[in-house]
Length: 561
Figure (cartoon, rainbow, N blue to C red):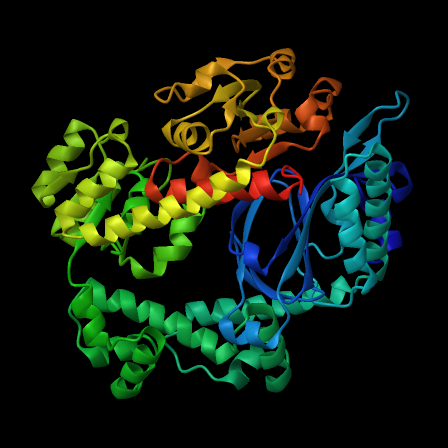
């Protein structure tokens, strides 16, 4: 579909001529800023690789981005960015990535008002565009960033005009139709590997499945995913092998056969090359069968102590950080939907796993604890009121991992000390923070112990409302737009609940004159936060919040040099 055709399909009848595009924010990240934790895109986002290479992870896939790559993310989706592998970084320039948050608006007939338009049909690189964009786009992004974050109103207006010009160039010059077809072919081959990894698969077979020659298939696959097809297949097999080694006591040749290798000795060499341990050494190292039950936040205590549980609640959507970090290492996955909504099924799965020790949070109900104690000895974590340090050290003492805990806490103190030093450069009139939660049609002042400890106790920022200092209260008083404006917050940190009613209200709110008149909104100092780490209280969540706070308060024009 070309641009002329696209212009006819917007909402059935609208054309490009009736639209305006509005840039809500632009950020530029470099090699030293990566990894970038999972971001929630409340507006549509364009991710442009301006230089070097990086890995882009979404809920559905991981993409190898190189100079010229563009990814369009729909509003309400999540993504994160990590560095490319060491080999790729040595060969390429350092990564530079621009992220542009925007929306299209169309006029309502007769009354002169604007409403948000559906923009996916306008973006030809909706899935993934590998290359073909003009070199001028990269210099445009740099000047666009400078103008947008300028305090000069004329320059900010110029940024909006330049953004529309950039969109026009991308839409008219992109060759995404071919890229999208290529992406679908690659995904088809990749999905086949995941479903048939135990079979004998060759490069010729996979290339034929994608409809490419073997040489071309190998080239485009590595460009897209950062690995050759056979290395990617080997990674799938090795991760499956780790789980098989831990779930039971099968013979080595049985594990090899189940993951597609006829020769157990060749399999053993591949395994050791991948993980630095032979299969038997790996099994011995991981022989303890510790289970975590309840909240996924317990993984935020396991990681600093450098142990991987035998069973734990993980989910690619509800706990993506832990899923991607540890999912392939945990043999038994418990359901993580809504903090263990499916409790009976999880208890049955845990009983089948036969753990040696079960670690759970204080929130488990009495009937759950009684059933857990029938499965294995239970260690109940101290409550949140004790603080995450006390909880971490108590668990470390229980597991004989006190050195790991002390080392992690020392590292955390150093990281946050660096952030404190940077934030000290802020003028006092720029240190006032309001943390809000949007739920259904209500705006509520929000806080929890982790937020209070980090933002106000550690980083010495000033709460716009004294009630934010009450660590034992999460949802505080409801606030009107007038109250938000009058509280004088320099920065607003915003959590938006991900349900259809709340998201619809949030879209309306962003276009309302009352919202746009709030000083922090006008100055571009509203920061939308993902649920993780900002709604979790654990050592890992505290570390991630500190990293994110340092990025927010020292990068987007908040510290003047």
